Image (cartoon, rainbow, N blue to C red; front, top):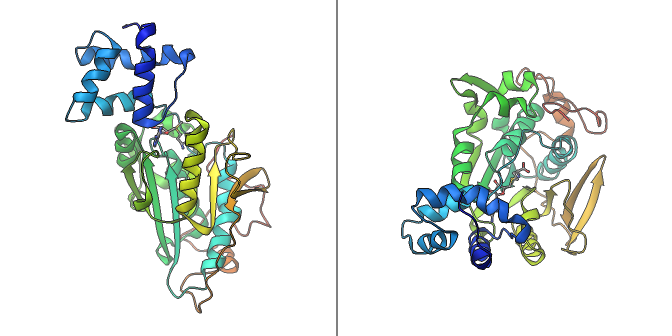
Length: 323
Ligand SMILES: C[S@@+](CC[C@H](N)C(=O)[O-])C[C@H]1O[C@@H](n2cnc3c(N)ncnc32)[C@H](O)[C@@H]1O
């Protein structure tokens, strides 16, 4: 293994910061050595300084991408922490549908998994929608997964998961319903895969082109950033949210004292954030999409055998997740 020398530490850490905003102090030397030693060796470099210089001048950008792929932590699992998915199912989606049901179009449902890693988060969201709504063609669904790691995005996009990955967070019934057997494990079914668009995206760069969303999941990524970058990230995410949109962050994260424009709200075991700015509600007639009341009827349809009715009636139920 190539050792990180004391006089190259700050150059390497600053370079990593410039690539992805991940901050690495001295206590993370082991991480640089453990994750970048092989990249350096494969590139024929004898030191990390050489690796940085090579990456800076590599016109193809391949070395830079390898460094990002290695230095990012892509740990994730299906239905991670379970409660955000209950929140989505029992409160957020019914509320969004009720509010948007006044439009003349199919109700749009737009959800962004910012820093989606290998896709388990956005596919868990797709499963919630399928379970809750049944006939998804009645809605205009746009699910977007973005991540800075092209390796993670490629895996997410393929939608193929090992037996171990599928065993982390998915109950057998959800696996049977939403995945097909594949030589490498399990593949997400086309009906769910086709709901999601994946894109490589650095959250530290301008992401205004991603569009607007009713719900944003941005979990377990800002923990790697410094405070000003965290504040900047959530401020810019707010610009990508509808005025009455919902932001869900990681269970160990908080916006308290960081982004005063967000109001923290609680529903059962979950915390979520909404912009304090007053929401503008659209008030146009006749929807082609069912309202919250109609969701309970939908739940009984053959297309949604496992869907359950209103949040008030079934607050403690979970599906598809393991604690
Ligand atoms: C620990 S995973 C979280 C995945 C998922 N959100 C979850 O909670 O299970 C963190 C992800 O953030 C991504 N990431 C790190 N820095 C990023 C940046 N500057 N822009 C976008 N994604 C980034 C990593 O590639 C990694 O996949």
